[in-house]
Length: 546
Image (cartoon, rainbow, N blue to C red; front, top):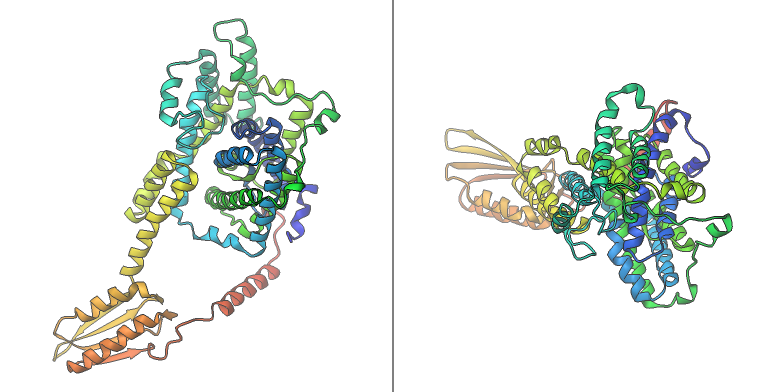
């Protein structure tokens, strides 16, 4: 099902490890509070969030074809998860819904539903990335000054605590904890300055930030800068391996006939799949090596991940942009970084929970603020402006919509605006024409586009019936068209009779006998066969990033 790459987690690439190892530490530091915060907001045990991150790292990354995507619990699912747990009445029943959602995702991958991911316009995807960067900055500023009323990783404009993004900011700056503010400010300075010293980059700057944050937190104890318990990371402390095993929860299979369970499963599967496909497309955009991730394989990997998560007591998982972009910014090269971050999550729970619980949220907020800035740089806005209004307007609409609603709603609004411009361009580019003057009048040649659909009917009709009187010779050339809609052909034939009745010369080239329905299946199979032959004939060089 997944090919030979499923054994990747057993074999690490030493060539990429020097990039992936430090990147995995950064992803671990970002993922740790996000896993805990999302679990807390979802009304689930804290360990469920950590377990989901572990499965997303070890299981999903080992099966996925994406090199830089990182999976884990998603903030966009918190409201759905919270509502489902309350409606189903028991966490064990909810776990069955997660398992079934994974099974549905696996089926979606098998039937190749991942092709949907190929139809998101670039302007919308880039706008989504910039919006996520802005959201990260706005949402992390309260944590940066020690105001931790919302969960770490909140993304929606209207928060679960009844605040919104801006009211939370207003309250945060009226209740500053100066200890947290100092830690965040120093952390940001280190993150900005550290990469300038090449000899120091062997140690990840975020790791330095976390160590310094712990030391400052300890130094502030007993002073006016002391951090409160809610300013620190909190993970479950286990004293033995048996206690660790006791944290796992298993689904209640007796509820398999419960209609509410199936409705929750279908809802989770659809939303998780959409978020995954969006994240995958976004990560490919910022991949420095411009690799393209296989969407159907990703859906199958996510399906197996969610089945595993539901079976062991985790939350629904998706590919997530924040962790994935942190991976890219940290210099990750391959799936090893995502897989290793899952290993660090396990070790953190088993070996050093007491140390992890000393990490201030303020220094982790600084890491995310730095990541957010890189996603929403001014150069991105300038580049999109120079591409033209048909790219810039959907880009800006997506940003505003995502910031003021949520990820899926915002992308849906941006997609509608982008489709308007796509349709407008399609309608206006349906044909080209040339006019040559002659003794009696003028000759006009219409060359139709490659695809002519019923949407182009009105534009063609208006152009033909609006020709100047001096045009006495008309040629309509459809020989370069692969498809001409039957409605359009009827318009052309009607116009032919109209032109003849007026005494004009008219010729239809490659239209009357046009095959209106191309054999798409045969065309697709031919493309796939050629692609397969190319891949067999080209040996992958040993230094190619996989």
